[in-house]
Every structure is written in structure tokens, then in C-alpha cells.
Image 1: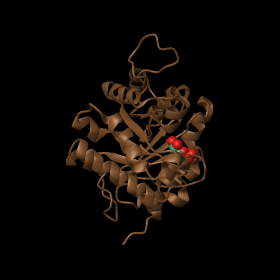
Image 2: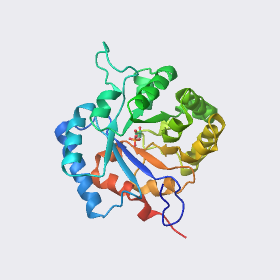
Image 3: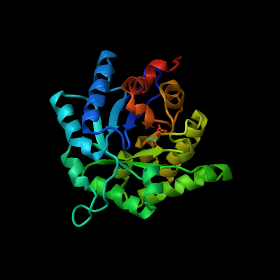
Image 4: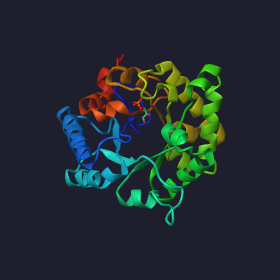
Length: 271
Ligand SMILES: O=C[C@H](O)COP(=O)(O)O
């Protein structure tokens, strides 16, 4: 755990770049090299903000080789995993394979998996458990679409996804879990939920974790915001009390922009 210069952070900030279905394995290496150089030039202290990238599966072996070969401090993960460990599941990727590739994290239930691939809460709960079985930390994504937001039921909707996702976890697992709140209406649209929207939901998620598990879990679980994050809005979102990190899509494909998001602290107003 880290405390920042302004004393805000009790949980280590976590800045994650989800490349989605962008960057083939050659482009991915170039992107990661540029990101690492930019952060090195800026003397980024990885103790102050953990940096993760989530490349496509086909990039992961190259990413592992680069991270190991150049001793990079950037960590990486998969964008999805199977709820099963092995067998006749064509096209799926086991948590065991991700673990063997050195993945520290895996996204579970990204809104694009929930909508395009119709992944249910039950399947996602099984995926969260599969990740833990293989020693890979799940980043459970939750969040509402535009209709739910307009109906004003977004908090209850999102908390129901959360409860379903963490069902059956031990307190220790829940404390390690990362939860990403992504309001679907703010993803890739240029629409940003305001810092106060991110705070409202992250506070509600933390309270729900305290209720579902206990206060200790709620104090430890890291909560991210994702949805049209850019360098010019990252600091304001991160200044919110219950926001511990950012899940960045489009802006993570630009190494200079993403590095500036990682270095959000340099844009924070300190007392
Ligand atoms: O995984 C990232 C989120 O879907 C946000 O994507 P975005 O930054 O392109 O809006």
C-alpha cells in the first residue's frame, strides 16, 4: 500500500490499459516499448502507481518476453478467460495458460463481453473463481447502460452485478480482487461520467463489499473507473476518495497519452 504526497492513497493506484482488439503482436511490442521508454524518461515510480496492460491473447507471449528481457515493471494480463480449466472448449483460453504466460491479472465481464458475447453473471462468477484457481487476479467489470442510467437505477443494477460476481469468494480473495466500474454509456463515446459519478458508484461498491464480506475487505479492494479516460480528466477522477485506479481503453493505444494518465499525480492539486 502506498500513500501519495497528498496523503490520499491508502491503496496503491492501479492504471490499466485495455488494448481491446487492437495491436497485432508486432504492433503490441512497439507500443509497450514506447510506453516503457516514456515512463522511464519521466522517471515514473511504479511504487506510486502500478501500470498494467491488457493486450490481445496473441500478443501475450511477446509481451512476456519483452517484460522479462528488459526487466520492465509493467505488469500485464488477459482480456478474458474460460471458466473451465481445460478440455473441449474451442476458442477459449484457460486461466492456467495465462498464469504460465506470467499474467498477473485478467479482465472478467468487460461490458463488451457481457453485451457482445452475452456473458451471464453466473458465467462471470465462474470465471472469477477460475482466475483465482490459477493465481491470476481478476478485474471484475461492472456497470450500467444508458437506459438504466436514465431510469436512475444504476447503483442497484451495478451492485447486483457485483454481488453475483463475488458470490462464493473468500474474504481473502475479495480483498485481492479489483473491481472496475464502467458506465457503458461512457465507453468509447467521448462521454465521461463525471468524477462525482465515479465516486458515487465506487463508494456504493465499497459499502456493498463491507456488507457482503467485512470492513477489512472493503478497505483493501481496489476500485477502478473506466470510460473515456484521457490525460486531461484522469487527475480529477483519481482525486475522488474511493477511486483507486483507471481502466483505459482508447487512450491506452497512444503511449504518450497513456503515460500522462499513469502520471496523473503530477496533475493532482496538493494542499
Ligand atoms: O476497458 C476500457 C473501457 O471500456 C473504457 O474504454 P474507453 O477508454 O475507450 O472509453
